[in-house]
Length: 243
Image 1: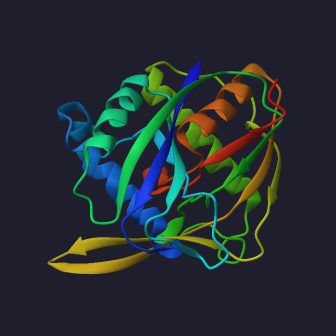
Image 2: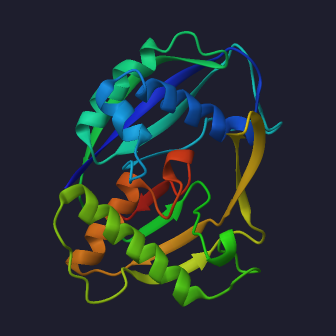
C-alpha cells in the first residue's frame, strides 16, 4: 500500500483565528473539489472521502494566523487520482476571500512498520443520541477501540473493494492525551440560517498490534484519518517508529 501527501503553501488574505482554521481549509478543499467533475461527484456523495488534512503551521501563540503571511498544511489520501486532481484545482481557486494556495508538493509514502500513532487533530467518534465519545459522556474504552477499528476496516474495504479479516482489534494500547475534550468548529446552512456546529473529539497515542492486518489498518489511519469527520480535519495522524 501507499498513500499520497500534498504539502500546501497557503498565503492568507486576512487574519484567521485558530478556531476557524479547520473550516477555512475544509471549505477551500470542498470548493476546489467542485471544480472537477470526478471530485464533485465524490464530494456530493454520502460516502468515505478517503482524505484528511491537518491545520496551518507553524502555529501562533496568539492563536491568530496572520494576514499576508504564508503557512503550510497537509492533505493526505490513499487515492492518487484525488491527490493529483486536487493539487491542480487548489492552485486554480484564486477567488477565495481567505487564502490562496501558492504551491503544492506531492510525496509518496509506502507502507512500513508502525510502532505508534499520534493524532494531531481531534479524533471524532459518534455515540448514541447524536453525541460524540468523550471520557466524561461515555468512558467505555472498549467501545471506543471497537469503533475506531471498525471504522478503519470499512475504509479499507470501501477503497480496495475487498474484505479484510482481522483476528483482533488493531489497537494494542490506547492513551488519551487530552484532559478535556478537543473541538473542531464548523458551520452548516439550515433553512437559510448559518448554524454553528462544534464537533467534540480526543487526541490519542496508539500502539498498534504487530500482525499484518493491524499494520494495514494503522496505515489506513495515516492515509485517510482516524475516526470520523476526516474531511473536516478530524483524526489526522502522525506515525512514529516507521522503519
